[in-house]
Amino acid sequence: MLDKLKEIETTALAALEKVQDESALEAWRVTYLGRSSALMNLFGALGALSKEERPRLGQAANQVKKALEAAFADRAAALKAAALQRSLAGERLDVTLPGRPLPRGRLHPDTQTLREIYRVFGEMGFQVYRAREVETDEYNYQLLNFPIGHPARDMQDTYFLEAEGRGDNPLLLRTHTSPGQIRSMREFSAMNPADPPPVRIILPGMCYRYEQVTTRHETQFDQVEGLAVGPGITFSDLKGTLADFARRMFGQSVRTRFRASHFPFTEPSAEFDVECFLCGGTGCGVCKGAGWLEIGGCGMVHPVVLQNGGYDPARYTGFAFGLGPQRIAMLRHRIEDIRYFWQNDLRFLEQF
Ligand code: DAH
Image 1: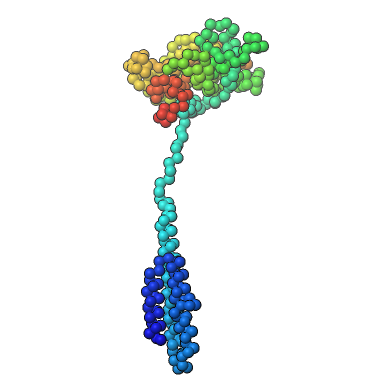
Image 2 (image 1 turned 90 degrees about the horizontal axis):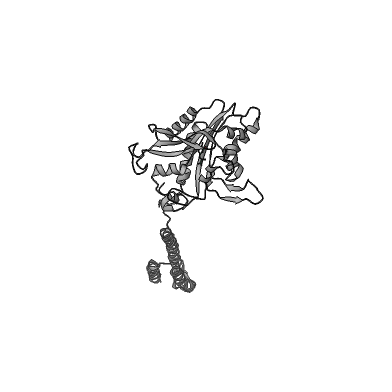
């Protein structure tokens, strides 16, 4: 009977070695430790033994049972650990993998230029003042000294929005930012009509003209208007301000010049040029051989305009200017076609 026990133990342990998964393990338990297993049958047979033999064999059988139970537990633990390892390896998360790149947005080249202009004038003490884009004939023209029928109106082909019942004052899309001069001066002078405060502002924003679209002309474009009003402001203040703007915007060594011109709302009036920063004044394709680039118009605010804004021209003077930021951006980046600005083609926009 001892031999039989030994044999049961050896075969059971050998079979356990081959067990690879939980269902095979359960089958092994039923076969070798189950109620009808050889071992259990042997326990049943103990009763037939003599009093002397019974304890010795009983003890030996118990030892085999314990050994098989311990081996079973070990095997169960080993299988569980192996299963855990497998699932860890299979579902591994590599936290060191680089993340998926997020596409980065950027500012439109026009916005970039505008913000730089705001920064430069901000350093010189100019505030940004926003005026409306839908204007009346009165503000866009009449109060700026373009009466009805004035020939200078022909320069600004206008989108009229509503004329019926409005007489000589139709609604329109502003053709320039200059009507903001009247709006802002009226707002400031209303604060203290007897002694209006000085004005030092820039007025940026969209303007609209019924133009034929070409590489240089769009039906909508930005302007940055400037306005400074106060006692004793002179043309040299205007020159100094714009020359300083050009130096801060294009570089300390850039030269500037003023050419006599005409605008109804300034007297005297001038065009403002900067030295071509590409060729340094010798002449190239960008400046068309001139060596100079036109940046905008300017002048001393016309007395009629001051009056219309609520500023007494006997006590106050002022200067104004109008810059074309798209033009500045085109010159700086050598953009050859103004139509790129509003086409929203990423191949263009992503270059800035
Ligand atoms: N409003 C003018 C235009 O659109 C630009 C301009 C010229 C504005 C001279 C000014 C100025 O303030 O002084 O053509």
